[in-house]
Amino acid sequence: MSQKTFHNLVIECVTGDIVRQPDMDAIVNAANAQLRMGGGVAGAIHRAAGPGLEEECRPLAPIEPGQAVISGGHDLPNRHVIHCLGPVYGQDEPAAELLAACYRHALQLAEEAGIESIAFPAISTGAFGYPLAEAARVALCTVIDEAPRLATVRLVRFVLHDPADQRVHVEILEGLDA
Image 1 (cartoon, rainbow, N blue to C red):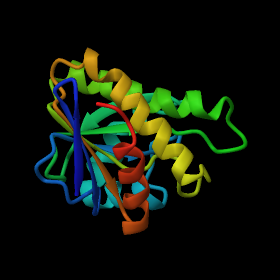
Image 2 (cartoon, rainbow, N blue to C red):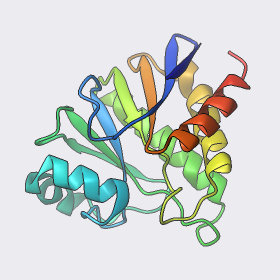
Image 3 (cartoon, rainbow, N blue to C red):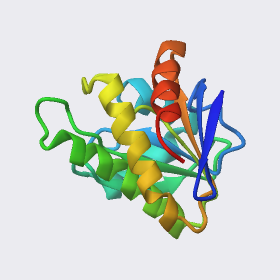
């Protein structure tokens, strides 16, 4: 694990499973527009949360790239799930702005809900094809840019499924000024 503090906000990068973050108030779902089970992160979160999550999400859908909505955690150990629709790389433009909007909107929802800790996956880097290093830079820079405006959120954890993905995030994080 690697961590760095910006404006009283601790940012961590870990290798792990997004649905196994019991110490986090909220986890973020790399959702599809319909907020349904799907594959990848969305599938793992829906399977772990149980059918109530999809039922709660049904009236919240569809969402557009860059948007985020919040739900309960259901059978997860987390109080909330924040669902973000990242851009499909090469299709949804401007990709970097839409990806940054995901992180910004998720943090705004977290603030409104009184969430102190939130875990993000690498949004859009799986089936949506966003290059990992580019996506990591957008994600980390956006969270750091939002840090001065966060009164409630004190911990942001990036949970990367693969150790190589975690190393990319750590390298970028370590290169950013606190």
